[in-house]
Image (cartoon, rainbow, N blue to C red; front, side, top):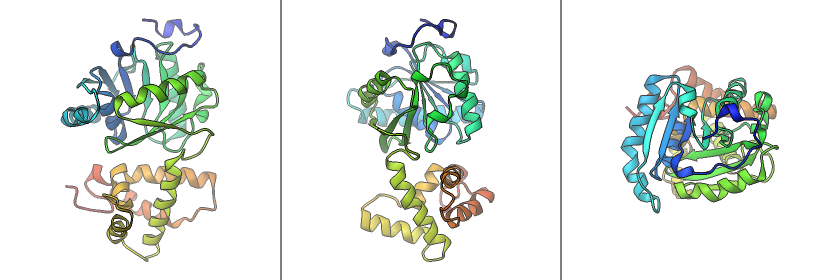
Length: 295
């Protein structure tokens, strides 16, 4: 297997996938769910995180959910989940690396430089970022042709993925993932132009922002608006439950990013989110968000 010392070789698509792991960088809410989906084909998945507690919780989550999720994937076979706080070990031999760390541009630039330096020469490096295009992460990357966005929603229940070029991504990488990812029970759709928010998230952002505005203005409450959405749109949960699942700190980070690009957006939705985040009410992961029945 070739490694980072051989990075002067031209990029080529990864081979021998069945004997190589997928590595997820970040053991948070989405990182562990992404790892779960890639663990349904009998191979090894690695989770890297500096927090031992987060790594342990992520491994336990995957192990608990894996039997049922694997059974729902055609041809699925339970794989192996492994975690590490050593980035070199986590990346060794990986054919696909997915970054799922907080939405901080400075941090992502640094991490992508490290991933590009340490990963095998043919590894694909993707970002799960929900708001930043990977064209903004390339400052320290020598091989941008293998970098792209692969944005997941909330697997295993929301299994669409946005695939978007960094602007320098090899066309073969995009075509390869469009064909390969459905084997893991996830379904990619290509954003054919660079787009903040990609595809579905642009629609979701409008719903989310207007929902927050209605509550911020005192027109409705989170639970009542969720009930209306469930009745009228036939959804299992409404936007406020969904924001609680994502994490209100993550939702606020994304809204701040949208506002930085478009200063004309209303401030009420962000102010409402700040009230909860500043109080430590981040949603499901802290036991309380817009709802307080998660404990």
